[in-house]
Amino acid sequence: MSRMSERVAEKVRQIKGSGIREFFDIAQRMEGAISLGVGEPDFVTPWSIREAGIFSLEKGYTSYTSNWGLLELREALSDVIYKESGVYYEPEGEILITTGVSEAFDLVIRAIVNPGDEVILHEPSYVSYKPCTAFAGGTSVCVDTGVEDEFKLRADKLEETITERTKAIILSYPNNPTGATLSRKDLEAIADVVNEHDLLVISDEIYGKLTYEGTHVCFSSLNGMQDRTILLNGFSKAYAMTGWRLGYAAGNKEIIEAMMKIHQYVMMCAPITAQMAAIEALKCDEEVERMVSEYNRRRRLIVKGLRDIGLSCFEPKGAFYAFPSIQITGLTSAEFAKRLLMEEKVVVIPGSVFGACGEGSIRCAYAVSQYELKEALERIERFLERGRVV
Ligand code: PLP
Image (cartoon, rainbow, N blue to C red; front, side):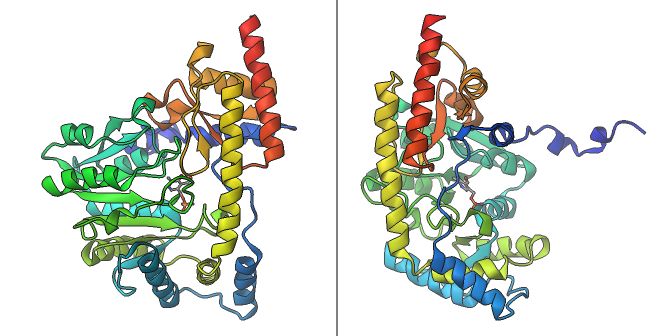
């Protein structure tokens, strides 16, 4: 028999592992490393949420839930979405609870894509979209965004990319890795194109609550967009609940039903403990505000710090990432990240991981303490200084 790797499906073999994990694994084994690598809150889940999880276990809630997720959670989500964005989703049929936005994205792409369908994606963007689209048999068509446009997806560039095979576009703002956001006006221009070309929109709004300038506008709240949009959101970032694995999708009944068909066979349901904790999370506005204010302070600190040491840096308006240019060093983003890790023990992620147009920049997650941020900045400065001398 030939090598085992040859038995792995072609589709899977062709896709590279996540470039983020690679750095994370090296850093975990390295003493004294500071990680601006993984996009994960450094806060522990707020106590009242943890307590709700513990309490549910004490009460013996250890079973499966409905495939759709607990009705109480779907009702609470329906209320919160309506209160925050004025969009009403039926708790029964239009909201599906998933194991994170990760699962929700995989479900939606599998539910709508036929082989050869095109899905438009703005880059730089989150690393999972392209592989999941490929696993589903779809083709990702990328639209570059750049600092000159504040990393916004421009409606005219979007329109140029549409073909008769285009099924959907992925909108991911506030953006990972750039921290860019879109204003209502930007979104309306995109909505016009979507309408004109009769497209679906997968809107990943996981960083919506982490918006520091202006207000986050839910794409489905725009005129005529509710039926075309599959809204994805979750608890990982805003509630510091990455390990609980909980998210949701909301949208048109028929699409959500199709997603549910896949979900019931591959996942059955999201974990009950996480669902019970999430009901409590939705009451924790103050805790979320406290964490968001702290991210905002760190955002100012890192942007100023990076600029002070000579790196030009787009001012992120949301999420918890800074995306400075490292072009002045003459290094590729992968060389920069590798050398910085080996020489100064600071983890950053090469911009190229988020799409070819991310080359020339690095992603620095500022979900670490201000103390660590200052230390990381000093180490980066030392690294840059050494480069100048050589
Ligand atoms: N979407 C974006 C834009 C992300 O940055 C991430 C995680 O980094 C996810 C989705 C995955 O989130 P979850 O933990 O809910 O699966």
